[in-house]
Length: 441
Image 1: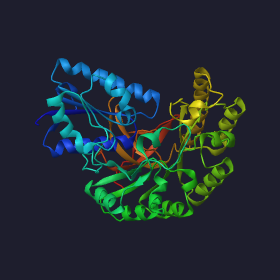
Image 2: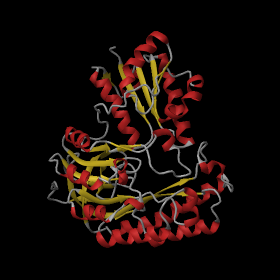
Image 3: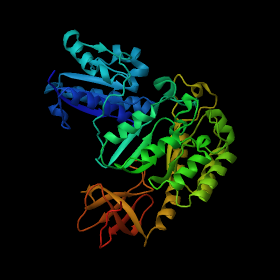
Image 4: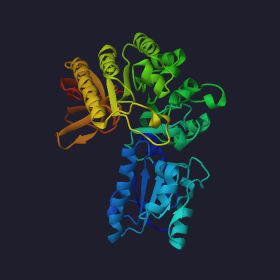
């Protein structure tokens, strides 16, 4: 099969890694990959199914991709979470797609495609070996993701992930170290999983700290960032490792979802407000320079105005550097779907907007404190609209936090520079590179 492939990958960075394994299969078979979808003979739509909005976006991408049939497009492959969970409904309804693959079926991409050229439409969900095939990285060369586990131990009442991805499975440490080494020179390696902090627990022992040490020993990895760290598993040992390991970025993403105990119980979350506050205080005491990112859900079933107000107050008390907010999405096949007290969409939207507004005020105050200071910033590229370079300070994670815009006489993408901050807004920083531009090794 000598075809030209294109890909649309949707959803989270964990899904991106799965998409990169599909790209790796394409490269292994010697086929060309194009960013110009009008040139593709085979289009892969790597889907997300976490929320209804994500499912709608995925189906829309397939329907839009089907428009390329008037040109060179011959086949559409739908992969990932959407067919993994909804193949029984999807296969008869989404006739625009020729091949369906699940989340662990990268090895079946070419066998399924070959069948589709003979037999028309093919459902290959669940037929793959589950092997973690070689990846073709799709991110900037200096930033790469490493997915250290799949599935989830947690049973949050609003979440479909365990029913899509299954039980928590940690990948062998030696394989992860070998994979990280194979990625080549990497300024920032981002560790991801549904819950990174439980790495190794499916084998009886938490091994996240040993994994961090093993990855830090690699000469090609300069910095390591941790995402998706559940609060109850942020141990003293992990805090000490973040504090003392010079390669681990002083940044922690801790999805909290709410501040009030009654809602946390309904959500199936294991931490309570007092424990969360104690953890946040300990993190800032042990690692004064740490940046903490989190996410919250607005309008969970039966959430009262008082509980919403308490969450707003919690933001002001904890002063997170970065926050994301989501209106509760009522997902079929989850316990929260049947809960009493479902909140009207307009109210959920209003509460989400209020949370964003409050956090913008807090972020603006925090960022203004950097004006006049010099920060270490990695250059991610050039922003044509703003006419300057764009990068990230260490407290800014790629694609989920703000950025730092800066001017400079010369830069090299992927290198770190000293940037003097001249102004800020509620989300981003602005500055100019120091006269003596230096790479920070």
